[in-house]
Image (cartoon, rainbow, N blue to C red; front, side, top):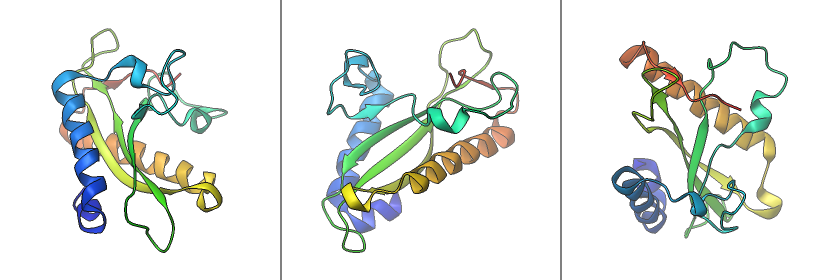
Length: 149
């Protein structure tokens, strides 16, 4: 978030406001662009990265579910218009409990239109998942994940 604040203070402010609202009030399901009745221009998506999980052999629950808050950038990066993504996961004490923690994993920029590269975003999602898993292994080793789908 500190890098975002240096590069685009207005986008940082908007993303930080979304993050704080999510922590204080939760996320409105209808603001989720992945929800069947969600708004097309909602402020978040979850779960995201479904294609990351396809074809991967892993025990159920070994990869976390991933969500993203996002805002449009107000300052071009490398002469490109971008969206900023704040990726998060939800560790749980066990698979049957409600969410205990929303863990912010990374903040990344995504190009718009011709500047968008799906491979870059996939890498960002995988990196966010791995960052969250690393933190949880060190801080909360007994936690499990919301199933990835």
